[in-house]
Length: 186
Image (cartoon, rainbow, N blue to C red):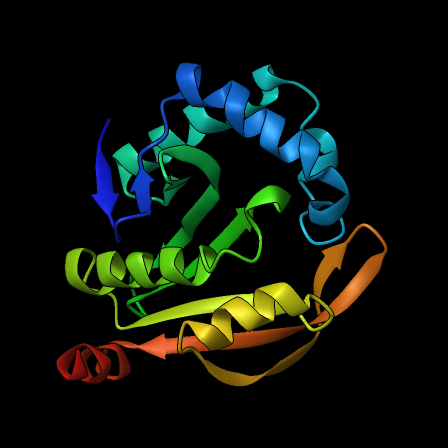
């Protein structure tokens, strides 16, 4: 397994479709009521085979440089996923997406996973900007962006189509220069 160790508790790993599908599906299924309002794909995830097909696709996208999706491991257990959903070569930017199983909430996992992805993005992928978009009403996701040191750039009207209609979305960003300043202080 190819992993990136963030700290003593958290690592990020490239998904192994056949091995990771069942635990990820179970985590989605257990967390369905918390995830579904914010993630349009959750209702479509009905079996481990659906998760395996998704993981197979994201591994292919990693191979072609389209995106990077990784499994979040907390104390060696599958806790969720985080990704660079797409890369914009002209703007030298990428967008982070993430979800965490409900039983792993309130353990300060996600903002550390975001910090790890930022290190990968700025060091390995040489992006200049990383963006997080979150529905205004999605308080946990907005809190992650804030705690990870992202800047609130503004709110876009009707930015996301979710199960109950369009939602305004907060756009958060972190620039390479901001990240470098923070890293120098460590």
